[in-house]
Image (cartoon, rainbow, N blue to C red; front, side):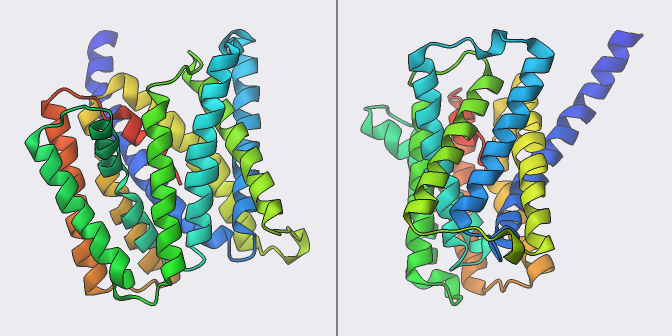
Length: 313
């Protein structure tokens, strides 16, 4: 009886967790937009990841003791490097870019991450399927269309360039995470990544002259930061990690083309961002390319887990 109940509930749990990843990670673009209204972009990101790392570390220590923290110096260094690339370079530059472009446009350009991963595989003499290559060409065509004219909105060239660099940094971190020594416990690895990424954002933010005046921060920005810490970094990642062990990776990877749609819709509904016909067309082309890559990789039985790893931006 209990076995049947578990079996019947499993699809509901999977779709519930998937809905969390869809909505939560799609909503973090809006969360960043609201947080940086009255907070410096990199210092706000540093608070997000350092607090999340401390909370996750405390949870692990209480539940599992010291065992999850057992790792070699090389494993610690690997996780720290990935954290710097994903969070300092990736998320940090997303926050900077959102000072100049809409959260929806940022999300659509970040959706190119799975395309970059295929490019890196080719550089390391892997041979992706023909449809995968077609998806990469189609997707980058959409990226080029949005980048050249800012999607028809009043987006600055600086914002577009920074968001493309953020996507590249995230892609490098995702690619390396499956190829260098990492802590055996995924939670401990995430804690190290967030800690290193948060410290990197502190150093970068201060070196660029950022200063945080708590008295000047609005209640909306504080609420957005709390949401990014508790929901974006902890709940979203917990749901994603559970999915990796309980659902097909091909299903989990659909986040890559659902998150941008969620981000665009929330940007329009909450902060009245403008969605131009160029953004719709260019975004559709990018998502078509990503869908080709993900579906082809699934059939080829090539895991796309590194591509999906924590794009909680």
